[in-house]
Length: 188
Image (cartoon, rainbow, N blue to C red):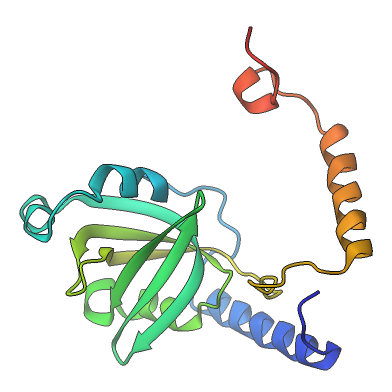
């Protein structure tokens, strides 16, 4: 399923659990119940993709966005990461002097698949990519298992059908919401 051996997977899980313990020691809430977001990633991309770097610098648009970490590129006391949400990706730029020592420690402890909230202002990098210049990071959840391989996914047919069956069973026994937008019921 993950194309890694059992011992490698066990080592990876142990490493991620140690990082989770370090986050607890730094005072982060491991499973926060709430995150105040201002936008989703697709909303930011649809609303501000057409803005030039000069427009973004003039307006200093403040945003707070949650997302799943898909890439991490540290560069000394700064670094980039891509957050994914709603089928879209958005880059964040994290500097130790902008986010503070504690939040930069969080950035250094992130793994691909973790959930994090980033707050800051929008700008364009030298390459023209729309980016959040983070002034705050909030830990949302740790991914203890690696994400499935990007190109192959879940190739074992038996596992795929078994997981599909579990999902169908779980959804069919879930309580239905009174709000038709959330329950999957059709509007008249």
